[in-house]
Image 1 (cartoon, one colour):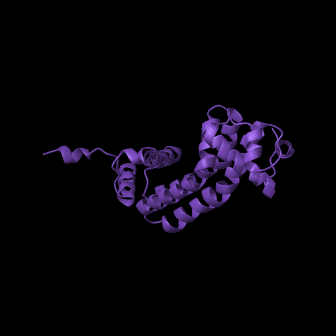
Image 2 (tube, rainbow, N blue to C red):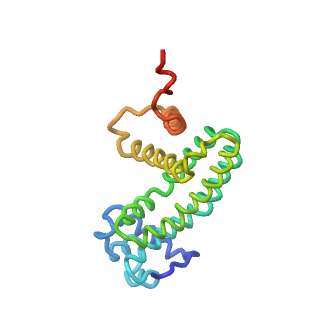
Image 3 (cartoon, rainbow, N blue to C red):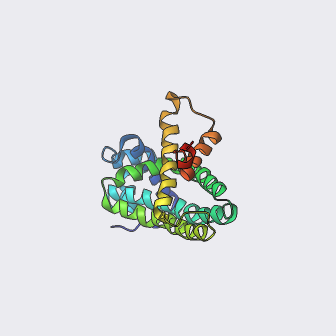
Amino acid sequence: MQEIDLKMSEKEKKILDAAIAVIGEKGFSAASTSEIARQAGVAEGTIFRYFKTKKDILRGILIHLGNVIAEPLVVYGLKKILYQEGREDLRSGIRLVLKDRMAVINAVFPMLRIVITEAMYHEDIRQILYDKIISRAVEVFEEYHREMVEKGLMKKEIDAVVAGRSILGNLVLFFVYRNLFGPMIQLDDYDRELDQVIDAVMHGIAMPADRDKP
């Protein structure tokens, strides 16, 4: 696999931005390097000076995505929220994480959509996605989970990865639901809906058993 230079030149970034636009519209298989070249305003041969194959462009998008969000946002950003604002109040911490991650997803959604779509078909893309982004977030959350368990704020019976996946899953569904079906449905106020998602994550949807007793 070709290694992509992490310190991209302006022309390389221009090619990746054009690739994101073309692939985002047509899909990876239907997008051609000639179309990407036209979008970037460069000769098609220039693309192959930076990326040996079309798939290397896809890898470049993924690595660029990782550079944009992995260290500054997934690691540093998540730690900042969890260990500064969310250290004592679990609910506030989860709320801040969800709002912050929503902002991140919105900012990089064109890249993220391409990467997630193509990861379903390319094992090496899945591996890079896991190594650069998912595993880093898991490490941060596992550390946070241990501390919250020690403070009695989270259940030790629930595995850290399961807890983190539950929070992330609700975040992704919240984002997808609002962005895909927003025009078709009556949406609640953003903050009110977010609070209800957090309540569902923290307390579930079932009434406590003792509330059912006369």
